[in-house]
Image 1: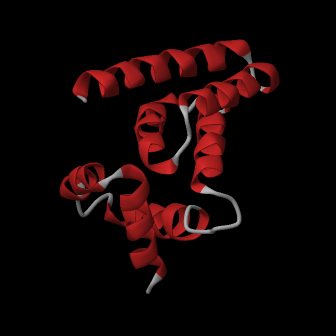
Image 2: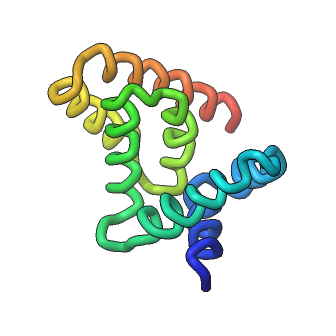
Length: 125
């Protein structure tokens, strides 16, 4: 299996078919090279490596997104915890680490986003 095929399989396993199908449908000629890059590198290399579990990788990703102020992807990765096995307690612990090592405002905003996303998920089920 190619790195792109591996990446797409991992991306679907983590984010779910519906999310990936929407992203693929929205892909244009302009952003196709970027989509290929993240599918091959993020999903086909980093997320497909089995050195650490998807649960751990999910927690790291959420903490890094919050610590670097990249809040737009936090809801997507909160929704993915259904597939990665990271619990609400795991996510909160990741954000508590963010508070100590990267700043309370960043953790506060990430927790706010997580709360809203969990509420949406519970309302939908």
